[in-house]
Image (cartoon, rainbow, N blue to C red):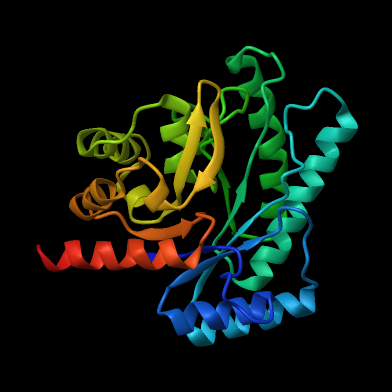
Length: 279
């Protein structure tokens, strides 16, 4: 990736009709650069429709990612639930690849009371099986486990960086709002710079040149994430985070998940471009 692109998690709210194709057109009209296709409830595109999505996105220069089903738990107790989770991720990855998406994002698992290290081994095994299947199909899409916002969910920074270093073809999805909610910290320039420097140190500078970030305001409490907020309503210090991106030469996709979607995506893009102009 040669620059930092900004876009929305799903079809922009101002899109009419609310379809993936119209959403891509709206992203281009707004002057944004990317969109995450949301397969969180179900994979809503056929192979033929996905081919249309790929053609339009390529023609308009809009980069795509996709988000797999919320109904995935690679640490489920029941083998049939694990198998169903794997099939949901595979289905999302197959259609996302036809769309021309670069990555598919996944909420990997819940601990379900297991020690984190036990859950890690189980989750790694089940994700690796999915990746082996995709490799056999010559599907090169990246699987990106997401940094999660609640302590009951698998997905600390250490966990997803470790997994990314151990499984080729896997990379992190960094949800900055989730980490702020999970830690109650991560809201100053030194914290932001140290956080992303750690990603570069553990995964190599290339990881910072092809990053995938979820961005929004966040409401949180003692148990972590409660809900997403618009940036203006939150305490998140997004300007200092964007400054860290600029200073560390971070490149890739910034997906806005604020309730107002494109409004905050445009705000982030405008702020970042202003920072870039100041040198």
